[in-house]
Image (cartoon, rainbow, N blue to C red; front, side, top):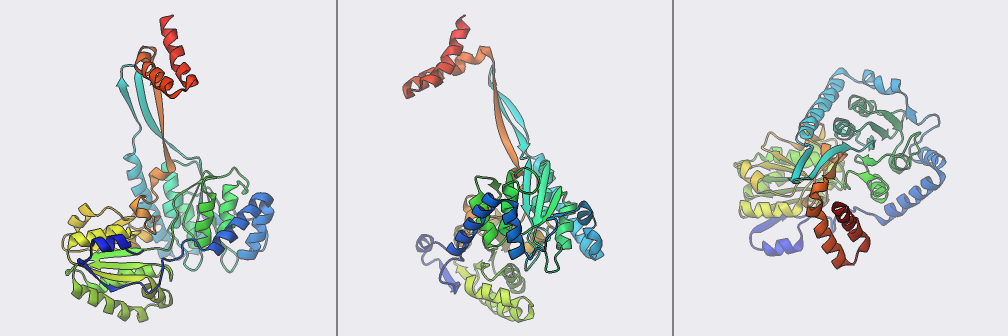
Length: 439
């Protein structure tokens, strides 16, 4: 997450970089070694099926044999193994995410319109039929991932949603992740991680047809597997390290700004965090506050390198410059903490999800409490793409219905165009119908 040189040149004299990322380049999105490893794994699994899946599960997941599929009893009873407060928080997140997805679905309406007498067109939203969700459970199990993937797919009307999640050191699933999948409506769940999980779902190796779509976050190997499987199946998006950016002015609290920057830097040592502010005093205060807070965090071994290598602070001369800089970064998560948040909301164009006001923090969405989806574009993808939503699981399928009386209004023009193109067969489909009118 860096400014493009041409943008900085265009804005020369209107900003000051207080802290630049120490890392000399972008966080690696496509390590050649990762690409090669994933390619070999996918070739092996496609050729050798479940034998290869089990081999990789044993090597990479420490899978010890038996059934990869978790029983319905294991799924439904997973909440019994959780503290009451955690179970209730998971249920709340599932309810809120489903509620937002339902409200979004209600805005997507089938329609039909008569373009002219006898020519009727329209579209209807039809859900994909099978979705495979990857539910990470590595260094930090992402409990809310099922809310954003399984839950939203079910609200969209997807008949079958299966999930894969890697085994824990003890051999079983992460019970919080599994319970989140259960309350989200998962149909089947498998104890399988990484590339082998995505390949098994995409190639139809889990005692069922191949899935139509793969969704869910994961490490670099999971992201690369999704990239290589795209086309065989649909995917939600290609995501790199989690990102956060903040636009703040003199009214912002440097303690909260620093905390929110470190909150997302905690995702991994490659996670970028950027502050763009219109106040030099706030820039200095946030830089100092980050250093004060870091030693207090048990995860400073992650947050510290992330901030050092991929963190930045930039002072913009005015709010228009701040918007131009931030639209260039196009961050995954963007917080606005200013005296006029509404102005920024109206003028910003490129972000995965927006968090308005000092009382809004990214973690509220990350954990599912805000209801919005946290599967979002990274690495500048927000310039052209949005995050996962209920609409992503729906296909707006068009149709047309033409009456005999409307034939001339279409066929005459198709006749002329097809002749000019030299496409005789296309022309015949129209002229034959015109001939029928004359009979």
